[in-house]
Image (cartoon, rainbow, N blue to C red; front, side, top):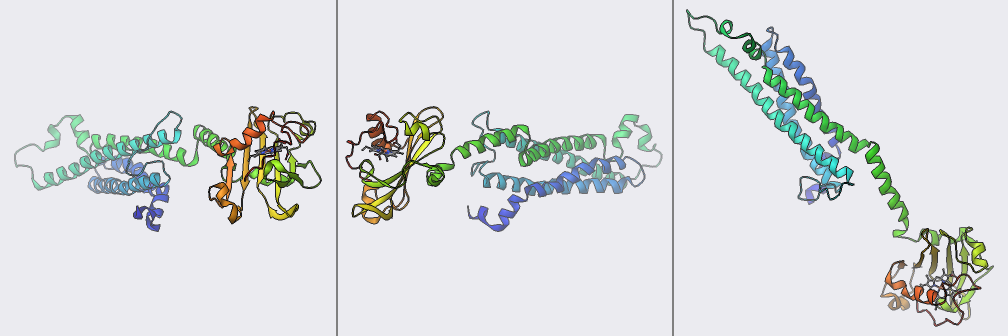
Length: 351
Ligand code: HEC
């Protein structure tokens, strides 16, 4: 879809909210021109004006429809190749609204088309009447017609007038939905807030933000200690304020608390300058335990240990973390240096 990516198409798509206002404005003013055409003075001029307005509204709505479709596809509300969004569940408020928005827009185009046809017809009938002069000796037409017929014959005619009101109704409703989709209302804002909250809960999809900020937690030891259990690295333990007391006394961490091990690689029996991975263990709000392992720069010689990756970020429920779970659970979900994971479990963790 090269066309979709071009700056012009981008512009057409993004300007949909502006582009719709030409047809919408014309349609709102249309019944006024129509109404004036019912007066006999300048009836012809007003008929022409109304036809021009309706024609322009109808034609310019094609641009608005096209830009709306482009926009919907660009923001992935409308699947590529589709004309309508796919509504899979009741909860997809935006998709449902867009569907109705499109259908009312099309209803407006349909009604508008018929309205325009009536307008053109009234103009044509008028020119025919001028072309065929009344036969001498016969009564002039209008006087013989019923009063009702006379009114409906005047100006652009009553059916066209009614259709123009329907047209406004369809596009007015369509525009209202459009406004809600752009600016939101209670329902969509609630749906958006829910989605936002969901995303927020997953800010760690790419990076273990909390583990990376270990420096803001409570340090357990003043300096690095050798940890045979974690690849023989030198580790320092950091615990959230909410969990530090429990950790120190070897009790399970309260919900929401977590522990991070920051590590250095060993260099001739001392903590080296090479940073090791971050290890994290948390007690989730539902009481379950989750692990994370983040190794931002895997030294080249050790990449085979982690499947050739340069950067490793695993978090529960990643199956690669069974090695953590296995060791920690076997040893009674070790809490803190005092309890749990026995120091005997030192089989060097390869990563
Ligand atoms: C060989 C067993 C073993 C394996 C495998 C292991 N750990 Fe540990 N873990 C321990 C032990 C023992 C401790 C206690 C402190 C220490 O010895 O470093 C501990 C402590 C921790 C701590 C500090 C909180 C606590 O419970 O004491 C974290 C966080 C942690 N491990 C994360 C992990 C992660 C993440 C993995 C997997 C990548 C992992 N561990 C794999 C044995 C293991």
